[in-house]
Length: 127
Image 1 (cartoon, one colour):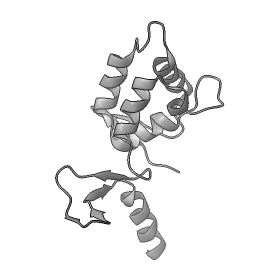
Image 2 (tube, one colour):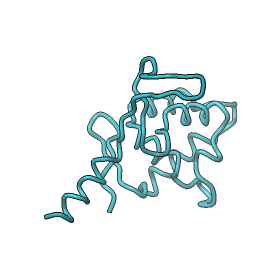
Image 3 (spheres, helix red, strand yellow):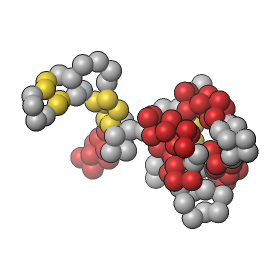
Image 4 (cartoon, helix red, strand yellow):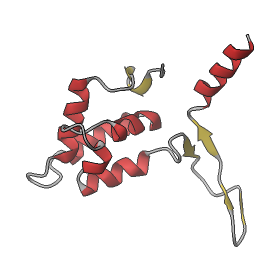
């Protein structure tokens, strides 16, 4: 069972998203008349969402249950979602310069937002 994901301002969502939330989000990210009509509202939601909440929104199914919302989102909304998604679905890079760099590599500090779930499982197995 997945833990609730903090959206912001005390709201939590669980996977999978409740149908009414999923369908509302799908409607917002796909509407194109006029183009990007709901971009300001989507930005408000994304700005308060934790990285894992953004991942849940991106992965949620669209209205026809065949594709993810990220796949069917308008161009501008898709770019905003991607810019807030965790790397490899769990790592968020810390702001600032790289810790180390060479001609062939770059080392960045990152926060592992899924580590708490992993460590909880390890601790339970040791108890």
